[in-house]
Length: 304
Image (cartoon, rainbow, N blue to C red; front, side):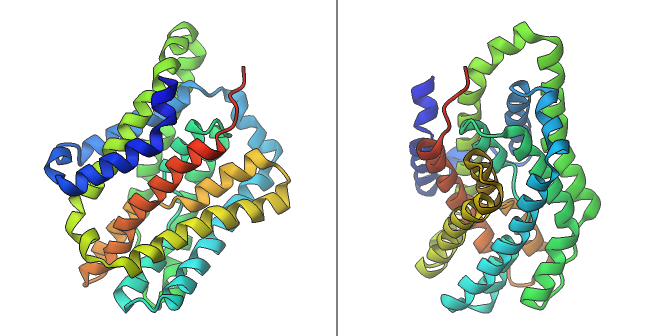
């Protein structure tokens, strides 16, 4: 199973290509199945956590402060700058800025989990950045792109609770009260996570095949540059302040992997031109591939 998990980047790339060639293969994995899949992944992570893992956040609140501030400063600046450098059409430029202003996505928690990083901190930062993003995301987009986007406050918060907090909390409870069962389950949970991530990515790519193929190389390189610099600068800046490689890796994953699904929804609901959602669709594939490569290259040794 360890070999299967370590080949995570290969599975993501292979099934993404397969989804582009034959989208119908993954049409069945959509809608609620994606939500349930993420919930199962979060449950698996929760099984590996202990309540004491979260107590460290109270002792070191600056971790979260540095992470969230870096998240909502680096990525929006990069989104605007890259859109200018590549001279993107207005609808693509707004779409790139939009996804750059979104909070971190739950995929970052999965990558932190598979990389043996600080999962408790990753989950907490995702939730805090999501709640903070209810205010910061529309304000940043409004100021940078000149247009105001309405955000569903209740829906955004409930989604974070449903997909992140509740499954993780359930995993914590099971881990505490059913240790024997938990010990058996955590043997399989990384492999299950890999399968579900691959299915989710393939489903999204298959659904957006036409958009992706028609979007052009210029936009694809723009999105790739956005996420690459997000990972890189996220690590450098957080390491300057924290001087901790493991924490800096955790933060850079959160910064480099945006909630692209939220970007797609905001674009579709608030912009007349459907092409505004294309950067978010491409972002989903790009940061998933980057994240999978991160697992293979920068994975921390597992504690015995």
